[in-house]
Amino acid sequence: MSIFKTVLLLSVVAVTAYAQGLECTADAAVVPTARSEGEAEPVGDVFLVCSGGTPAASTAINITLTLNTNITGLALGADSAKSEALLLIDDPSPDAVNLSNGFSYNGEVLGTPYVAAGAPGSGNVYLADQTSATSVTWYGVPFVAPGPSASRTLRLTDIRANATMLASTGGLTPVMASLTSVIPIGNPSQILVALGYPGLAFAATLPQPGTANLTFTENFAGAFRERVLPGTGPFTAVRQDIPGELYNTESQLTPCFTYGDCTTPPAAGIGLATNGTMLLARMTNLGTAAASVSVPNQVVSAVGQLTAYLIVDGKPVEAAGSTSLAVTGASLNVLYEVTGSDAFSIDNFTIPAVLFNSSGASIAYPASAMFNGYLAPIDSTPTASATAPRPRFAP
Image (tube, rainbow, N blue to C red; front, side):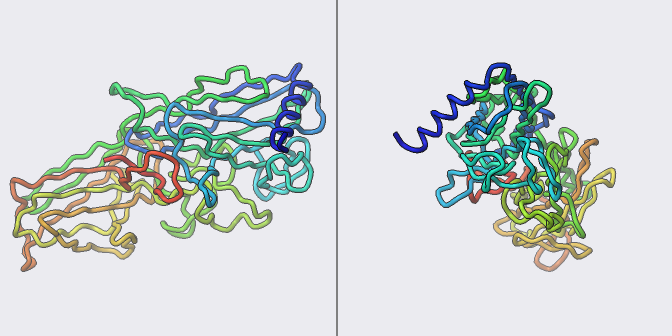
C-alpha cells in the first residue's frame, strides 16, 4: 500500500473516531453578483463552522468543492495542477499571532499537506489542487476537533467561476457549490455562492456629427471594479489580506506569507487580478476618410466616484489631455481601465470620441458607422489557466 493511501486510510479512521458529536455547517458569508459575461468571476467565500467532537491530535482531511460551472482561477505550478483557491483555518490575520487548530502561528502561514498541526511545516493556509474543470480539492489539511464548548472555522476563498456557462433566462443565474469531505457536513450541497447578471449596458450617441459619445453603464452597483485597493497612485496596490473583508475589487484575498513585512504590495499571484475592469469600444465602418479618433486620457464617472484611464499598447496614459488614436481599415478599438470603484451606486462613463481626417480636420461620422461596447479583456479561456487574464470576458 502506498504512503498516500495509508495516510488517507488513517485519516478516515481517525475522523471516524472523533466524529461522534462533531457537527459542521457550511454557508456562504456573502453572495456577490457575478457578471454573466465573465469567465473568471469571484464568488463568495464558503466557510465551515465546526463544533463538538473530542480535541486530540490533528487528523489530515481532504475537502473538495465543486461548482455547477467551471472553476477558472489562477493555475499554479509547473504542471498547473495547483489552484490559487485557499483554505484558511480559523481566519488567521496577517502580521499577528494567531491560534489556528489550537496552535500558535505567526501570521498567515502556508502549510504543507499531511503535516500535523503545530509541527514544523504545518500552517493555517492551504492551497488546493485543481481536480477537475469544476472542482478543487484541499488534500491533507490538519484538523483538530474543537470540543463541545468551542468552534473551528474553515474558510474556502479565492475561487473564480465561469458565469458564461450558466443558462440564463434573463434574470439572476445562481452559481452553486457543494462540498465533499470525511468530516460531517450538515448541508454539503446547494450552497449559493454568486448570482449571475449582465454587468454592462452600452450606448452610442452623436451629439455632433463629428463626435460620438460612447457610454458604458453598470447594470448593477459594483459591476465596474478597480484591480486592487489603491496605494500611492491609481496603478499601485496595497495588500488585501484580511479574511472575510469585502474589498469590492477585481482581486480577492492576497495573503501575506512574510510575517512582519505585510505592508509591501502584493506580487502577481494568489488572489491578485491582472487588471481592473476594462471597457472596450469597437468602432467600425468609419469610412475611407477616417484617419484618427481623439479621446480623453481619463474619464470620470457620472457621480464622480470612478475614474478610468485610456490604455495604449498595454499601458495607461496618465498624462492630462487627450490622445489621437490611428484608424486602421476604417476601424478602431478604444480601451479604458477602471481605477476607482463604488460598490453602492450604479454609475457610468461617457467617452467623447472625435473623428478626424488625414489633414487633421474634424469630420462627420458616416451613417454606416457602428459602435459596440464590451467588458474586457476579452478572452476565450473557459477553464483555470496559468496565463489567461483575471478577470476575462466573453464578447
